[in-house]
Every structure is written in structure tokens, then in C-alpha cells.
Amino acid sequence: MKLMVNHQTHYFYSDLVNSSIQYIKMTPSTNSHQCVKHWDVSVPGVREMKLDAFRNVWLTTTQRKPYQQMTIMAQGIVEMNPNKPEGVQDDLNPNLFLQPTLSTMCDTDMKSFADCYVPRINRANLIRLSEAILEHIPYVSNQTSVHTSAIEAFQRRQGVCQDHSHVMIAMCKYLGIPARYVSGYLYVPHMAHLASHAWVEAYLDDTWYCFDTSNQLFTPQSHIYVAVGRDYWDVAPVRGVRDKGGVESMNSIVQVLGC
Image 1 (cartoon, rainbow, N blue to C red):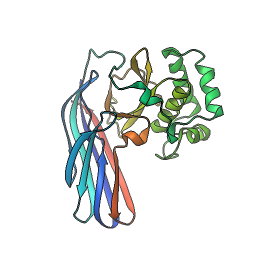
Image 2: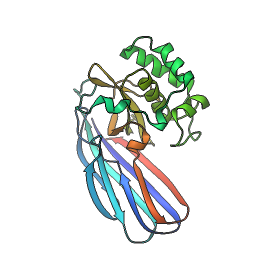
Image 3: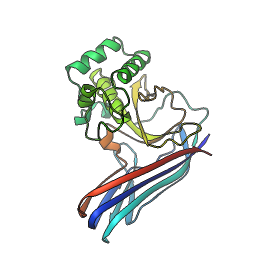
């Protein structure tokens, strides 16, 4: 199966931006799960491409001319491997994904919650934990932000895929299981999936297994991997700094279609 992605992000500013630097992680890589047939990121400015500490493709662009709006467009075609293994293997050190971050801390209630559903560490119990997280934190949009931590989302009892992922990672790390945040896209047949997506991979028996809590999917059949990290901030599609510009507003459009 081949999937076509069109991801447009539009920025608008109340005043002129004199200059800016953007750090963009919107480029998937070929792995055992997928083959990138074509991909391009269109963005103004001088470009430099390299790999980050987690081997994600990291595009840095520098814009020196004043502007008041900017569009970043990522487009491409990715082919899913029909014979892919159920889990993913790579040579990244799994201990990197035991490191604490502010977004993936656990409080006492979260630790008790994890102990309840994972009395023994195995994949079946982690699936039970993922199911329980979704029941505890129903998917509700526009109630949290990228700054919401796992503890805050757990206490609010509502959130989106980013919150589900942070909570799952926090609990896995408490249990001593390396877990990483995955950014990407999800193809939903018969409709365009109108948002980018996030899920978790947990490391068991030398293999990274998928835990998509928001959709209760545990085999990544229609997931396009873009980047992995310890939390959202390691894989944020666009981060940057700018000189002036006043108030920023942004809207994003994402389409994932079969082709």
C-alpha cells in the first residue's frame, strides 16, 4: 500500500518578521516498516539537513528577508511494507528512552495506576495499560496544549494523542521499560486523516512495539513514521526563533490518502 501525504503549515504575523531560524522535523526515513518513495519539504530560506541524536532527519532553514507570512509544505509518497515484522528493531540505545523529561514524569496516582494494570512486564499487560489510559483519559480535543505534561493530562482526565503518548511513556519509564514518542501520520480508509498523529513504542525483548492508545492499535499497519524521541519536544514538527513579528497565528492542514 502506498500513501500520499500533504502537510501544509501556514504562519501569519501581526508585524514584519526581520529574520528567523526554523528547525523542521517533517521528513520520514525508510525503515523495515516503510519505504519513502518521494518526499520534499518546501520552505523559504537557506536550508541545511542533518540527523539529530535519534537519527531523525532535521532540516534547519534560515530566513534573512523580512516577511509577514510563511508556509511550510511537506509532501511525499510512502509505501508500507506488507511483510513487515510486528515490531521494529534498530540500533538506537534503548536506555536513551529511560531518561526523564518534564513532559513524562509520574506522580503517585500514576504509579499506582501502572502497577494495577502491569503486575508483570509483558506486552499483553502493556496493552491492558494502554486500554485503561484511554478509558481514564477520553479523547477530547482543544482541552490541552503541547505544554500539558503527563501528570496534568492524567489529572484532567481528557486529552489527545500527544497526552495519551506522554502518559503511556511516563508509566512505562516508571516500570523500567524504555518507551519513546513517535510522530507521524495515520491513514484512515475512505477519508483524509485531518491531523498528524502521535503514538508510543515500548521496548520489550529487544523489539520496539507499537502502542497507539488514542486508536487502540497495536500493530502499525497504516502508520507513517516521521520521528522518534523522548517526548513531543524531541520530535516537534516545527520549532524556531524569530526577530520581531508581533503576534503569531498558525493553521495546519494534513491529508493522508491511499494512492
